[in-house]
Image 1 (spheres, one colour):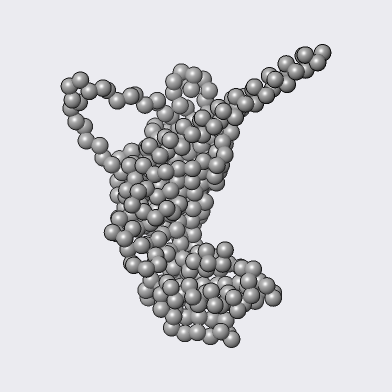
Image 2: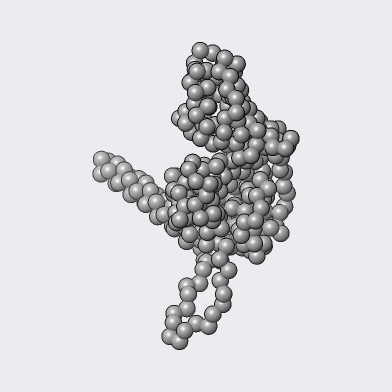
Length: 320
């Protein structure tokens, strides 16, 4: 009886160990493929695969800037859900019935030379067809991919401009984007979709990755889209700090980001110019240890919520 129990325990341990190794190997493979397609380093926090349910869950997926840029996050996706076809996989084809991305943040960076991180990704390279050299090996054939439906949810875009000298100019686009695409036929298409769609939603112009998305056909595949962009001119956040602390840190951030025009500590307000916009910071006491900060920004009478959110982003970073 004891021998049977030991055999059962051993079998459970072996199966559990196999699952851990399997998930680790597949997680590493996905990270390698993502890096190969984009040319940017990636990190995957968690991975689990269910053969019975034919589903995959990926958590804490992060892609970082390519070479030549600060080590900031390019794409932060806390959760990815996949429904796949096991039968197709056994036949040597990747068939994903559905893939869901919950993109928390995308980072757009301009380096000191004025080049954008998204324009330095491999997916924007247009490869010319050249005659293979005599005796050269043929490139390995990629496994066929079919994605029936891809759902994309995006939180915000953080733009950092390092070409201005000194601290980077920061703008934050609070985007509420939900979009669905069908019939994606390559990993390049999927990568172009994830990178280009947030930029389009935020109204960012003149980036080369748009051409890549058009060439891959991604731009012509929308099923349904719901996009809302806040027309307000302010950003707001609460912090567990005293009003004095919030005022001093807010003042310091505004001095770093622009030019302070007026200070009123007793009234809890600061006026400044940031990225060409008139910015007003207002404090509101919640209690003795908590303060609400509201930042509004306008340029030529037009609301600039991305500038206001950029100030809040810097204050948040400072108060961490």
